[in-house]
Amino acid sequence: MKIKSYERIIIHRHVRPDPDALGSQVGLAEIIKTSFPDKEVFVVGDEEESLLFLAKMDQIDDEKFNGALAIICDAANQERISDKRYLQAAEVIKIDHHPEVDIYGDISWINTKSSSTSEMVYELFVNGKEIGIKVSNHAAMLLYAGIVGDTGRFLFPSATDITFQYASELVKYDFNRTELYDNLYRMNENIAHLKGYILQNFTVSPNGVSAIKITKEILAEYFLTPEETSKLVGVLGEIEGIRAWVIFVEDDGLIRVRLRSKGPVIHKIAAKFNGGGHPLASGATIYDWKETEAVIAELEHACQQYTE
Image 1 (cartoon, one colour):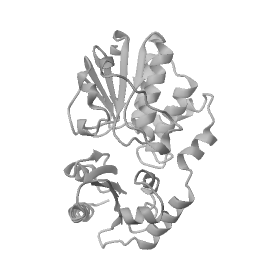
Image 2: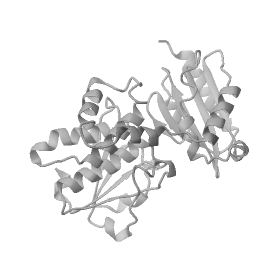
Image 3: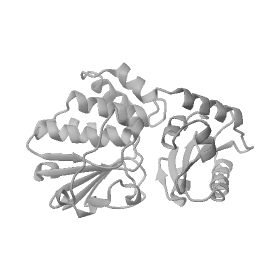
Image 4: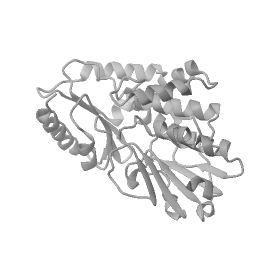
């Protein structure tokens, strides 16, 4: 087991983290710290203000990467890895549940049947009990948060019998689930107002495609940052007639593309626009509003070709 071979381990994940990215990254760090207390373990990357209740990142010098093991959680392609210093590490391990977009790492563990990377990290514990792998209460909370986040509170098809089994084991640990759900899904007044704007302004094409554009002006009107809009990505999912949808959010120098689907495969579309993800939930990046038409056209084609 490579983790046992290294005295210093640095764990990364993808940029603009979601609960699964943070849950798997920091949950794994907590497992290693609990199981091997003499090891140095760090978590690095950009921070997401709305998820600081889950974890904060470590600030470390470049020299820490010399001779270290780097583990990348929940990042299908190298472009999306937060903190490129993993390239300075002695070895790199990739742990991910997305369809493989980019082959990287000295060791790669990919399971596209897993609901989340957090589920995979818990599986590491399940299979490693005999060699002293342990899960703390804090690690259990982080992994549970990651599973909840990536399964849409167990509503998505990705939630399998194994997912429910692991979740049932994780809730036996000592953490406050009610508080966790409140933190994950709390919506402030400004976000609620933007949700109203989206529901009042969406349209649906004959193929079942819906697209919403949130410009800087709209963000300013509702006093929101681009990051805060991530809570609204699923708002169109319960509307009859919508097969797939995209929310474009303007940021500094780029436009975030948040894609979701009820059936048509969309991660290949995301890959064409500097992104990736799951067949039914993906993200991408474009740099001009003119490109939104190309994204929508790809989504229209996917929905037109889709048969249930």
